[in-house]
Amino acid sequence: MDIFQWAIASLVVFGWPFLLSAQKVPTSEPNTESSARLLGRVLAWQDTFPLGAGLGPEYQVFVFAIERGRSERTTPVKVAYKFFKSEGPLPDRFFDYSRQYELQVVRDAKCDESVKSLSYAKNVDESGKPLPPTYVLRFLEGAPNDALKPDAVLACYVLRPGKYRVLTQNSGGTPPTPTTR
Image 1 (spheres, rainbow, N blue to C red):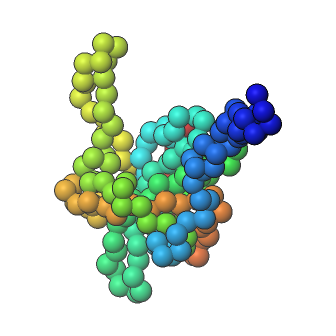
Image 2: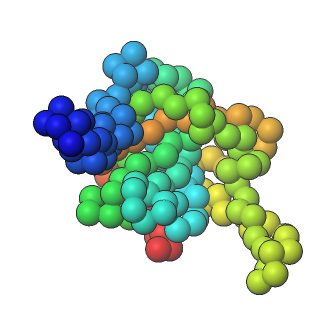
């Protein structure tokens, strides 16, 4: 084998994994055109274990009511909090309707979902036979539970750790809604 063939063989054997991994790595920075700033309150949360395969990110899902100015009108949206195990899930105190938040999120139309679909978890028995679904949407204390229409489709946004802040909190405040983890 001449030096040219040896160099090509070495590149294929040793360089191929690096070429493949470079193609699979997504950009860590979100597209700035799809970034948004949402002001409002958490209405409800999905009472399920965080979703994820354990190797990549996990997700907590909640419904957020976007508040527009001083009007009483709000727009509910779905928010998927994307975190890694080392970052941890949202703290229990986050789920407090008395707190008004600013969220820095990224719009992701691929996870838009109806309120009905978001509200129920599918169940199966040991053999894989479908069982009745479980209602998993939990409204926070003090939140209006008539704010969501079952057939409404909620726009989905992705929230990352450290991309939110508390704007206001009622002084009396309702206690945080406990989560089950």
